[in-house]
Image (cartoon, rainbow, N blue to C red; front, side, top):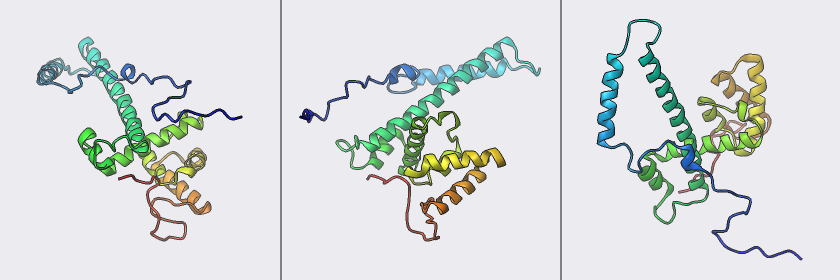
Length: 212
């Protein structure tokens, strides 16, 4: 006999461990950068410019500052990837519903994003997840490639991206080549590409159903 599952909305699968967001993000005060932080950064910029040399090779001070700056850029990029995932989770699970009238209000007040920008972040996170699940993380789309792949219906994105990768091997990995390969894939598989159906009609829409 099948064992009953408790109807507890807060219940978590036993195998699911808390995700260590706080360990992956840089330590930043909850309120963001303070005026004192900005004063410190202003002084840092003055010192960095004053330390600039006219030689091609960096001085020890310049090299140290550059290494620190590159590390911060990398950490900020990771933060944006996590931000995109969080927006996807809030969107898909409708976690905004108790405090906000719509997902657009949530995005504006909590992330300073328009709904259009929110949906692009959601697309980016969704694509990153499906690529990881398909073991394509190492060759996943980046930059504008993500925006182009987001024009394809979600159920077709993995197989469509494999077609793009094959095209890249022959013709190079330009965004225009990705768009061309995806458009051809959608035509061949009777799938929507952006707002364009294979027959050229204007019906159809965004790959995700946008919650309001």
